[in-house]
Image 1 (tube, one colour):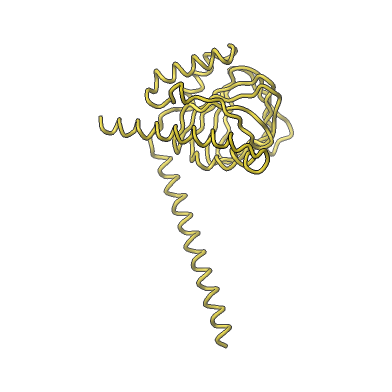
Image 2 (cartoon, rainbow, N blue to C red):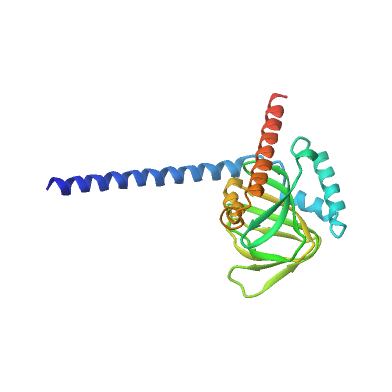
Length: 229
């Protein structure tokens, strides 16, 4: 029957297109993984944690000022200037905090983070490794598959591995230095979802996207300058 034959051909074309799409997706993922495994990074988790730990227990605003000054000295051209630094609310996974982005590229970010009120929720599950070194306050983490939580204090560094999900809780006055490494655009869905579908605070979303774009432009300019040197 011509009708049956036509339906079968249409189904085969659809299956072939889906197969091509799946193959292209796998290829892109493999290329991204290879690129991230072989590229040179600006920062290291250990160096960031060691720097932040020097100021653990101090007043967080003073500590943050010292961290920014030292980062600019160590990594010239990679930290946003003062006029672009801005504390921006973050609503994600049921919790609410505030961040001040210092550096961002496609594969790294560095920011100051914390909360002035008690808050908690889901950590998110990322294609990136995220580490936080506590300056003040306390952070509680409940790992997937366990029945007990752990509490971390100033000077401690918490590492959130690629693909890991936890329950997280910050006490009021908890502030930390955060470093992320991986495919950073993959984290934006979680970071912006609550803003888009719950709070509908589109001004905060604009601030978030704007500061990320500024960071990307700064990093691109620095890389071009270094390549031409």
